Image (cartoon, rainbow, N blue to C red; front, side):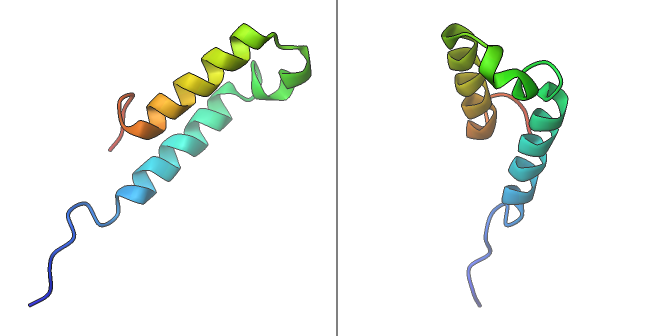
Length: 59
């Protein structure tokens, strides 16, 4: 018997969370990257990374 992979499809949940994040923040953040200050970029990057790290939500 082979080993059963725990959460074999977890990458789908993380991918979906990433796409929902991009879609949700596109109008207010991602479409205005050139007009946004460094503090907002730092916040956006760290918040997105935390979400993908599993601390912000998931399936």
